[in-house]
Length: 398
Ligand code: NHW
Image 1: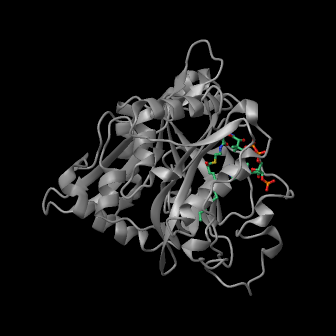
Image 2 (image 1 turned 180 degrees about the horizontal axis):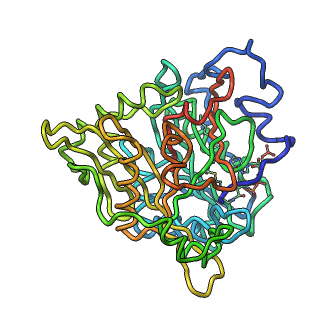
């Protein structure tokens, strides 16, 4: 769900003009890895915003304002990503958006809205947040671009390219020249193509709302039994992460992420922001060794519900998304089984995970099933010799 089906190569009038890997260059290993275009002096960055159609104006969104946060929330709630069959639409909460858009060192200028001049109604949005992303041996300052959304009534008018150019300009003004983003659609050109896997926690609801179907030769009661989980986690010392764990979790995570070709470069401030538990936004658990009190294992997931479109009985699908997980002492299988158990306790209907990092090692055994679309990862103004396998990625975007 939530992705486009495999599309054939199309022409891309906008993307062909951008410093991204182009389809024609696939397989050309003579091209160097690294930035496609050199940084330019800041004085050469365009100082004025790009032009919008006359009826619209730019607005910088103050995500600290509850009112503005609600405007962005409502735009996305009604117009953001749907699955191919238009049965579900992402419903990021206000608390989630406020968290996702205000990490350490964020720039308010990268939270960009478009309003109708007369009514002042918010009709489009795009955002960036700063991040350090390591590509092989280089740690690169990047923008993570997310929440690109154009109101349904304004689609196919080439507003998206203007918004992308405007966010690019504002990122450049901060002397940052690279970006990372993911999308369900194929654009020039993915650095990796990943798949979502889904672990049913509430089979009856998932079947009732059409998220999944009863398997061949399966009854509802057999299905419920198949997905049943223990009531409490199995690992001794498994507990919620607390503020005092930030240094240990940072060490564990940095060490784990160092093995991937492209990975987030988290410091303690990042871990504090991105991984300390926040109710209904992000959950993190760890294993503290009962003997040594070392933190040996870690798992986390974020909360992203989807609106169920046009179902008389249910309005929301409660989904947990696997975030960063590290197993050193506990098996990955047992660690993630405990993550499923706490997610189930918290009332999630489904637990989703990408096939990134070492996730392949637990997906099948823990009864995850493959989703029906793909999530493509992209870098802006950074070329890799060739595409990566999902297991070479140590990066999860929200
Ligand atoms: S992916 C989620 C994107 N949002 C949605 O799918 C929500 C529902 N859809 C919409 O709101 C996570 C509209 O359909 C959108 C397109 C706004 C998607 N990424 O205005 P036009 C992200 O937020 C290209 C990039 O007529 P529209 C990541 C398309 O290929 N490009 O279309 C965002 C075409 O160009 P082409 C996308 O349907 C990353 C052009 O837009 C795209 O009314 C952004 C058509 O424009 C997508 N998801 O609006 C890039 N979807 O060349 C950041 C379509 O093919 C880059 N397009 O002709 C880095 C910037 C920072 C650099 C810093 C150095």
